Length: 628
Image (spheres, rainbow, N blue to C red):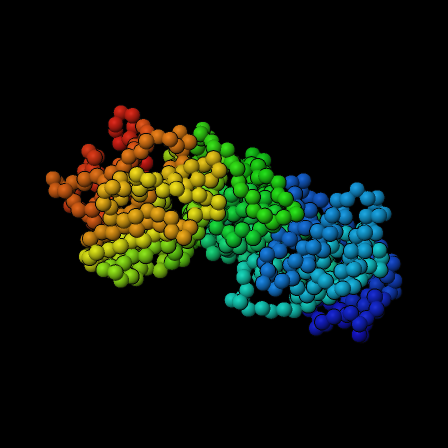
């Protein structure tokens, strides 16, 4: 190879056929490159080059965050499941784990360095991990940045060459965005060019690659989040893998003294971490993610520190209260938050709840504390998704599927949802979704109490054509939930550890001995409600109650009579329900067909379309939500 042909943007595929001396002499350097490094390379002096290289790489391995539970060497394993389909991550994982065990050993420094060199030399000799694979290259970059001071001169130069070759090759790749997942593209087009440009800053055109990676990461951060930092709902399934690329890149930039973010993107990153913190389970996993996370709590703690969230910020307090991860296993642990009865004072400015039309995502959460209640709902696709956690224990998790039949034939409904109402105050978070189909309008309502540990899930529809309708609704139970149906009534109990939640199907007759137009059951691991009606509409409300104070209280519910100017309305025109559990009582009302005047239900006179209320000790109705 001719002198000075190795640089970023060159067409080389490998320098493996060259000796170390010839390879160093073939590199083209930036005019501002370290003079000692360049002089050693041009002279082909590997020992001098290794000495200068260690000095330059020293800044990349300084510890920046005490909260960082996962050692920097293992941070690439946050993305270990990003490329599971190519089977390469297992070798990378074992390799890095072996190195980390040596770093944590009680051996003398000399013995520790010898053991580390032996592991790295063996991996280079056998060709694995594959540096041309993104996860493999990420692993080698971590080794180069973190362990340069403990490697022999010849080994360090060989590792540096191998990683440089792979970084240059990666910079030449041009994949098709439509064929790749978001987190993979972030790693290949953003993080690797950014980190390669930092590690090989003295090589010609490294600055261009670094800037290209930084630009991609900034642009994608803006493209994947709403103005308040809410991530788009389509990212939730693999959100930990997406966050990993941003967090590692920001960390590498901070250690190298070159910030990844400008002022605008830094603010957006901070907002993103706050929004994600509100959607996290008590062990750091994010709601509705696929669970394939390595050290999720560590990822979030590192992200919180890099985002600059101070200790006084509620989101940071929540994140840093997560239990430590087990670095030797990706096994998902069950959250064990305390069953809190006393609620903190409501702070509207720092409320964890949010809703984004653009992101198709709503987070209903009662507070930031460990042991809180949360319901995350996505509405960006034909079937919304729900993740309900009570005292941090997941109860429901998955697609909220609904089928509507008319005279035995499935009715085509709309394929998109709009948020038509969002309301949040000190008492409740309320979300209403609506979908317009041909001849039918479907809707869903979700209300989470911020003070009293209960949730309302309703769905229904309004049709133009009259007939015999059947509505079937299914939401998967979370893993570890046990289900018991009451022998005498139609209520159901969901249990997880010490938690017990009662499910009340308000539109079905309470007593099993009485006929009911539907069923509530556990079908194939799903909370399943079937409800029928002759007319033009169905309203199907479910109340889930996990209050410890009401756990053993007697319950009673019934459908109410709704009257308009003395006329009793049909259930497909308007319907109301009363639920009593112990001394607590609630009223739920929905108008399904518009009326000429206000209507009366249980003595409450209202012109509103929806009323959700509770009864005071005086017997007066105190509305929680009223929708016009």
